[in-house]
Length: 400
Ligand code: ADP
Ligand code: MG
Image (cartoon, rainbow, N blue to C red; front, side, top):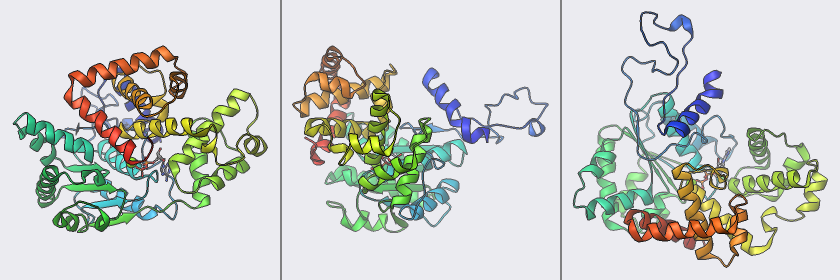
């Protein structure tokens, strides 16, 4: 119980203050080897724990225990759990999870990584977006040294690749991915991929790669039904320390049918609004404030700002709260600055609105953020590539 409820809290606290991620396990005193000098609660249970290595941070926010299971995602959820428990040892290799946006692919993929990490079912865990894979690959070609790249990916015990549709038409990196895939597969290492469509519909992919993708288990996530949507809203409200009145949950769920991220966004706005107005959250209040779809409030400019913000958060595997918060952790400020920069670059919104969108910052903060991003783009080619990819994703989504 303590592990489930506090394990990740402790891990995150250490990560935030110390910059590295511990693996926390708890031992009841009767099981502890009393002759061992180290009986602290943060050591590994196994005598010889695998060294945990991560190339891309696993976000402890995405776990199996806070993923609400319903008819539409049950199959993908069960497969993900099976794979996380015995990576490389099930018939689900590779596991491909596909769905439309905002239905929990990244959540499940991260949860697999998190489970492997916390239960030490895999040593070398590699979580990566297809975009990062490509930019690492291009970087290694530029440096004329692919050995580090090859070592990182081909020695994974579990390789988690998010959004493979972005491999799109980059031949070199597809070839490299094909080899990585084969090496891992032949060595019984687990591969999990997510995609926005079924493998045969992936455009620009070599047929041999597509047939590899289909050789294990392909699991689809369908949009959640109304009961699942209500359960998700309750779950999210609870994790923010609020209880959602039943009719309010239903009201929101009825108006947001296709996308869990939107559902979350609507909840955030409603909670913020109720707090600002200092009014009790009732269905009557919500229907008065938001007679239509909640996203439609405020007209188009704000809509694009929140879309940019959501996509940026997703791209950096952060929550909206982290992105719009005021933590000065470097990875957070960097992502925040990039988000503000893209809002300025891609919309006509006034700086003031951008500042408000990013947690009530004033317009000088936005200007400074944009300057610092511009400067770094000039000096740092990897960073430039990252921003370019995110921008391309936004343009593809039709945000800008
Ligand atoms: P995708 O990668 O498919 O676009 P995400 O995994 O990023 O979608 O999900 C979007 C948001 O919705 C995340 O904040 C995620 O935690 C949440 N979410 C999606 N499905 C569920 C679910 N079944 N239970 C709880 N949260 C969910
Ligand atoms: Mg995703």
